[in-house]
Amino acid sequence: MDPSLGPRLDAAAAALCAARSPALRAGILASDESTPTLGRRLTAAGLPNDAPTRAAWRECMYGAELGVNGISGAIVFEEALEQKTHGGQPLLRLLTDQGVAVGVKADQGLAPLDGGAEGETRTKGLPRLARGAAKEWAAAGASFAKWRAALRVPPSPEAVRVNVEELARYAAACQAAGLVPVVEPELLIDGAHDAETAASALRTLLKALFAALKAHGVRTSGVLLKIMPAVPGADADPTTPRPSDAALATLTIDSLAATVPADVPGVMLLSGGLGEEGATRVLNACAAEAASRSCPWAVSYSFGRALQASCMAAWAAGRREGEEAEAAALPAARAALEAAASANSAAAAGAFAGEHPAANGEARDLREGFRGFRDDAASKE
Image 1 (cartoon, rainbow, N blue to C red):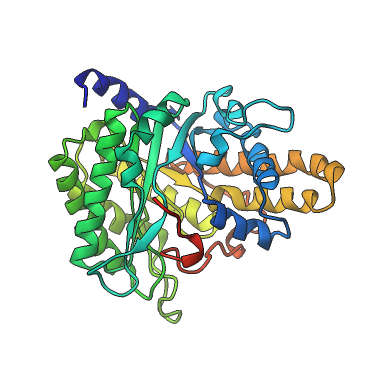
Image 2: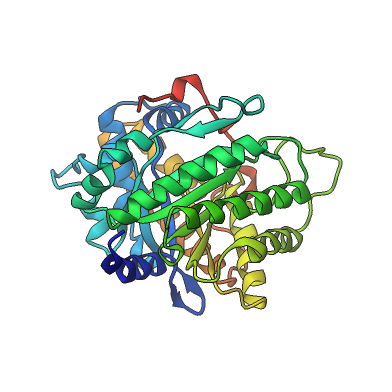
């Protein structure tokens, strides 16, 4: 990496998780769902999975007042780079005009892992990074990127080895092109594991990850880490009481404190199937726990469905009825996204309290089944 890029990467990474005020910290909207994944959500909402519908949904999200409600960046799917608004302007201008940085989904989905345990995966996409894709994204206006690895709990040694190596190679390619890499080694919520097992797996995974980043010369002060907090698996014994949010935060921050270098600017939590309210409250507990220990890195969020779910429900109800109904539904849909962003930005400062703004709160189940490899989501490198 060109040494002159270092300070710019550091500043850009720090800005994505910066404190806006004592009660508000910046976070990231993850809106980079692949065409098959977004299509499943649109179909469930009674809408077709076609390019005009996907563009209209993105216009609904990106036209909300995101910047003033704490959103510092939005991760987008590559299709969005070329899409236009209903009025004909570049879609992503809705983000950049309000000071929201654009990030790109760098990976191309998952593939079965040879030599791993049953169901384990590696992530596709390194060949196109080697061909200069990160430079193309930077030229198109992106300032950061994201790469997701998906690992079951507990992961096999081979799954850890392969996935952290790929994450490190991605991060090095992004930094060489001037992009901040968001490094996402997601421990899947799928499974019957308890929170303690998740925390142990997180510690093992992050120790290996930062060793790989160092080996590839990645500047950790110009990286953001994105992880699933240490929570019980979705299939855990329902008769066993769920640990409190404070207990989950202690497990999560213990693992981070033992592994994450002090110069990493931020750890962004993902929601990973937690409900809208549940994701916010776990984030709030983790941020408060990190602050109480004076941890050197910020704790913030990079949420997808935990920001989008209520917004999509309101927007889709209008779009199903036609153009006039969709236009009438837009203010309420965008208000739902704005309220979720504000709540989570407060939670990232450890300052969320009171009723959650989600339409159905914890009652809205955001789990979509196994988030690992699916044949219908496969894509070619």
